[in-house]
Image 1 (cartoon, rainbow, N blue to C red):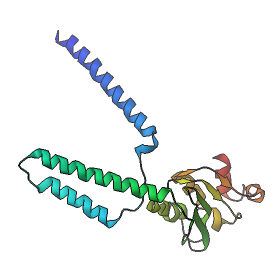
Image 2 (tube, one colour):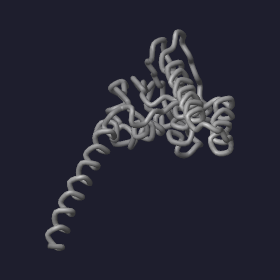
Image 3 (cartoon, rainbow, N blue to C red):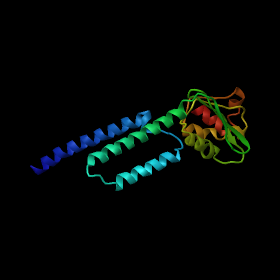
Image 4 (cartoon, rainbow, N blue to C red):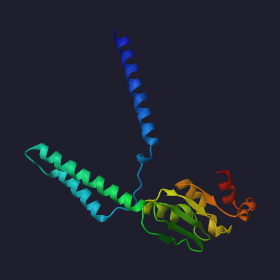
Length: 196
């Protein structure tokens, strides 16, 4: 009797584990499974730690009051983060940012609406400029999608950070002239972009 009960229990646990794996994979495929909001204001950080201290140390005779206040504070934080993400994603004006990459060029144009265009992404003297400078700025600004990367010309100080940017975030397209792709054997970036 005991071995058959263990077999039935094993089948049930395996089924639940498979269901949990399916749910996790489903949630991971949604765009909302990770929300990049960028830098957070000090006011929200203070509010968050005040919330943690409140939950941990404040005593109420009626636990229902504490639960209601906690739910209200969680709701305020979610609304604040949602408004912050909305303001950083949908803009009414043009924002042009020239990144400090040393001898090279990387310019991000954030167009009205939510389009982002990156003009060049490279540096002659800074190593790993795509990850250390450009991707870091994109994270700080809450940008996880580039609509277009435009390559002005095929000098290394304008292109060597593009592979890291393409690997870091979603890029709709990379645009360059024919001369850039005719030198695919000279620079690894052109070959990488053709294969992507």
